[in-house]
Length: 114
Image 1 (cartoon, rainbow, N blue to C red):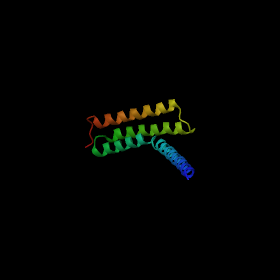
Image 2: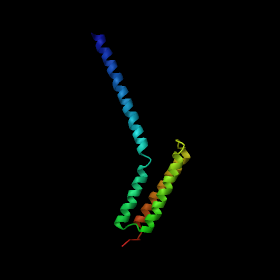
Image 3: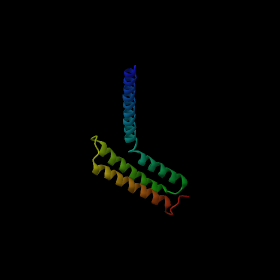
Image 4: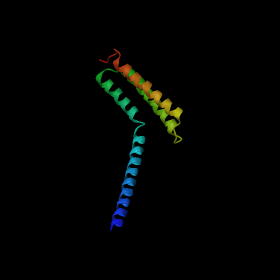
């Protein structure tokens, strides 16, 4: 009787560990797939909010959207072969940081759309 309980406990532990492992892999996979566009989506939303509030002029919005299209182009080229090198990743991050800074400057300069 004791051997049966021990065997069942071992099987149960294996099943729980396997389930946790699969859940971890799915979580990592979902995070990896969702992350690359998060920053860019947030930036586009920020541009639209700035235009609606009048903080960003149409001309500034056009320039910022053009910068977002450039980032999309960089990403498309980087992901084309299915592998993103460290250099490509650094280039994408640098472009996104620059875009974020440009959005901030456009929203906080004194140009207003009335």
